[in-house]
Image (cartoon, rainbow, N blue to C red):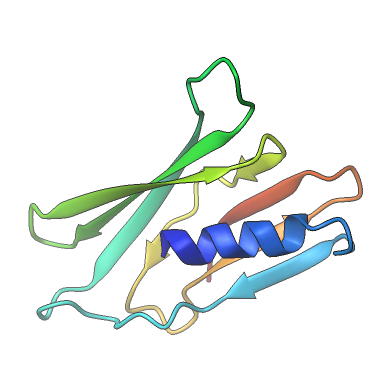
Length: 112
């Protein structure tokens, strides 16, 4: 999931890519061991003074269990995360999206 979001960001961030929106319906199973799962993400500064990159932390939880896992990916300073979005694995339209604006800002999030 993280690598797909990062690839989407890099593709839309390319100087030859015009402003617009793209999305990716992950090729992920709707259930793991019979449980559906949810993912949420937060974007934070990388914490190093020498770079303007940001870290997107993605937390995935198996619903009705106490199991969760977190992964992190690096994005550029022009990335923004659409905060209240949640990925729900058993939704038929679950996806992630990236939208590039004229000023170069790239808004990412989970969609339905």
